[in-house]
Length: 109
Length: 115
Image (cartoon, rainbow over all chains, first blue to last red; front, side, top):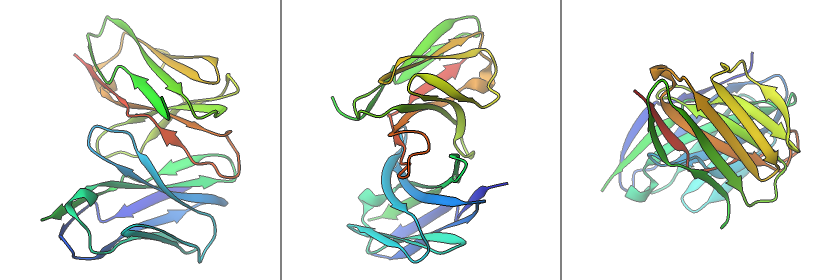
């Protein structure tokens, strides 16, 4: 069965301390991998779509990369406003979405 | 208004009440979804509508009843809920279920508490 595993579950960083979030997946046929940001009490906000291994996307301090087994969300020099839960999801050839449980990121000033 | 709008944002109801959640999307999409989000669990798909037709019902109890009168509006009717149904209910839309891009765009969610 298709599934998504995110690690770590929670991450605390000092402001300016770069790090990466991991999304490991198994999928029967990948059509796309998505990253979302979710603030407390709000709905997920779309960040990136990656379609094939080797692809990279960037937005401000965030860069998402994709291999055949996992995706990383790299956060460079994070700021407190980057604190949120980051969700990963895969979309398979059966038109189904599978979400991970998320990584809760806290950036300390 | 833009994006996906959900009302109410917060709802407290007793187990014998009947209430409804409303979702409206202004993105011109043709597919709409209800998801349930509980702490420490992945998002759970409940229902999918494509062009107003229900295409997926993910073994959801009958106390949850969806309604999609058109491609822009989606409702979730609630009755005789249980305390374990307390969660954040998210509405989402996409161009079309199965479209190549596939991105889901979510509303802010309705936080439901069942007493």
